[in-house]
Length: 72
Image (cartoon, rainbow, N blue to C red; front, side, top):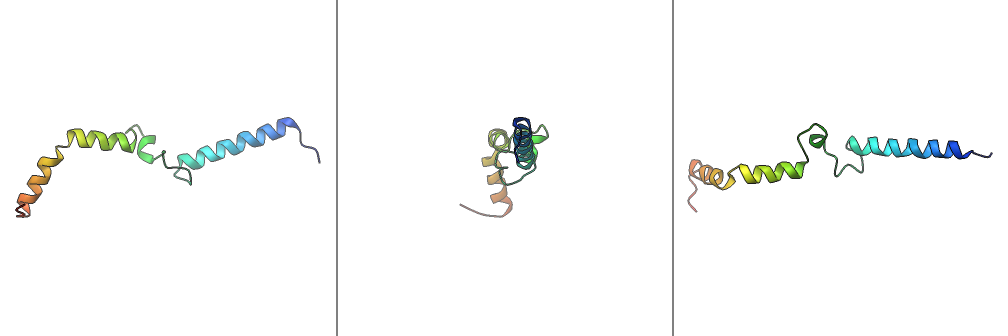
């Protein structure tokens, strides 16, 4: 059976779209596509950077130590 060029292109396009959908829905290739980055919150790495910049984490660590009565 001989397959036309148009059918081959359609199958390749369909396969590409399916792989994209798989990646965007946390499939096998979803390392860079997290749900958070799909809803306008930005990438998880960008969120970590902003939390580190604005979270005042060192002060919060000191508060947690004080609450837990840890003297270091």
